[in-house]
Length: 153
Image 1 (cartoon, helix red, strand yellow):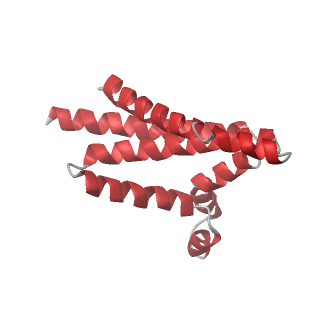
Image 2 (cartoon, one colour):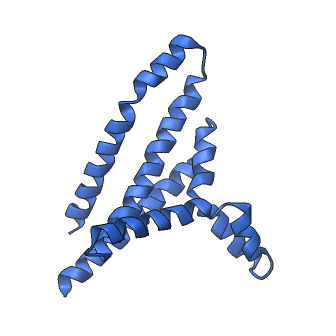
């Protein structure tokens, strides 16, 4: 089961990586027309690949729960959207009045967009990369557990 889940995920992530790599002519054009910061562009590509990996991990896990692919897609999109919104001041403000600061910080740290923005600025911080890899690993582990539970039934 583990091999099937990880293999399916890696195939989808590789396909996404190839699609992202096929946008490199834009990078070449920008370099031809101007003088961009190529390190920032490279880290933005890396951040995009990591964020896509996170989205794929959530989607594959939700797909393991539902028999209907349309429902799985909608639930995965909503869940990914919530993981983006987690760091926004409006969401954090909702918890400000009654939740302890530790919980607010935990919710803010779950924001995919916050970690992506750090990488897209050209800063390759180990914490952001670790966050994405851990996020992916947790969702893949939940996927494996769910598939094994369905298989046991």
